[in-house]
Length: 168
Length: 318
Image 1 (tube, chains in turn yellow, purple):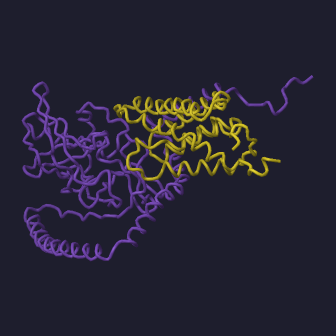
Image 2 (image 1 turned 180 degrees about the vertical axis):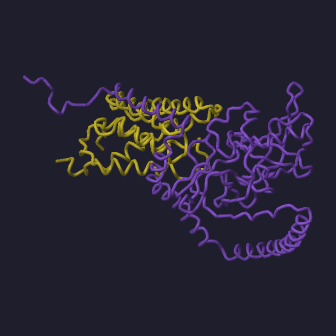
Image 3 (image 1 turned 135 degrees about the horizontal axis):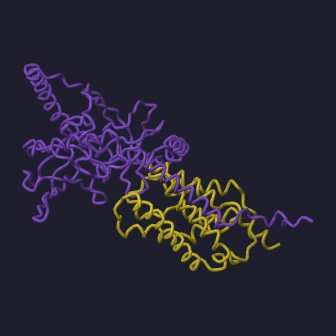
């Protein structure tokens, strides 16, 4: 088995990116029983593309997807837009560094990024006058970071070459 | 000579500049949305664009439910049938008594010259999904302005009130649940007719009566129903049951915690009620802000409801 970092990947297709975002939004809108313990799939996919394709997916995409999330959830317009553009900035900024590490250490970086994103949402909510919701809200970002290696291998699947082609 | 770098090095403005740009754009939107509500048009468009994905996200549940009903055993169906038949018998008796009482009540109301109550119309709707924000206490239903839903209408399920419509989009609308801390509902204790205002308790899933005098006559287990004096909620809908009362000596108010009787956080089907009564005009805006509370982002009718109910409490205590 060739380690994933040494493989030469195919160029990414735009349809893969759009499809992955649609899938993430779909997962976010599923009627989960307790939303505090569900990772934010959109944030995870956005972080992935910002790390892998910082020239294609960046702050603008994050901002627009944040607006969709806000409108779909009926919360203040702009809070997820702010959080996702912050997430996109951090991911683009750290992308070179993150790709240098193995999956475990990458997860640690992603955990930090997702926590900062959650904190941005929290600050907006507190600023709007809502009470502090309790510490379980940090479970979602940490679970998201745990899912990072799986998400990476899943989202890179369309870009992998078959083994035979590799050997040539 | 031209000194611009070749195009494959171009990365646009620096990321930090972009972050500053988008962050200020978001903050501007936040302020506009929170204070002035100018962006509701934009919100409606975004919600309409996200609708297909939201609709698709309820699909796995539908499939699971239909599979479950397909695989359910005959025995369980027979059992359910028997249970339903027994329930029907009980309901028929109730319905007969109800008709009798209704005619009696109508007669008495004619006798005291009160106006006839207008019937309450109910529109069934399906819950699409809960808001992702765990502290928003909102849910979305699959009926919108295309089906004639109006903002401010109360929403109930088969056991009681669950909330109120706060935003209406073309194909779906947003329901703010009773447990939302910003949501208020005027209630009445069934046992003695005491009126009060119930507020959402937030993450606890409870609702509470605030500003109750310390000697208010409320007991554990008291049932609360809508009082109907706000003109928004029809009177007599079950709201909650009192579970705990805190009478603190240091504070002049008692805090009463109640458990909602309806499945506020569960259930899939709800009723949107329309209660079009011929109301007298609202009183002048003189005694506003008696509560002196920040009913910012006030929900139109809801705020006036709370005010009226407040006035009612004032009348009671005098």
